[in-house]
Length: 93
Image 1 (cartoon, rainbow, N blue to C red):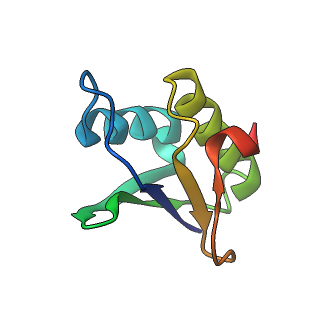
Image 2 (image 1 turned 60 degrees about the horizontal axis):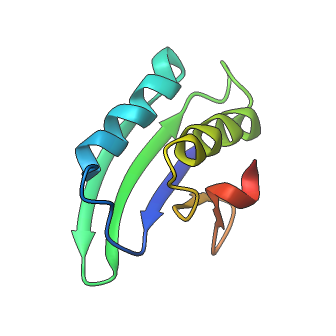
């Protein structure tokens, strides 16, 4: 399952997108991977692929959200492939 991780604003000075990518990769472990990244006029994003036959996608979505909230990044949006808009990490914990 594909999950788009969207930052519609700048990250804090002590965190960059690579740090967020590392955080998500640690949470994913062998159950998925960060497959892409980008930046644009409206912010930044990371693309995540989760192995649905290994872990339930909703469980992984919660794990990713928990990790983001723990780093004070609860405003970051997680958008699974079946949703149009996504929800903030804080809304998912």
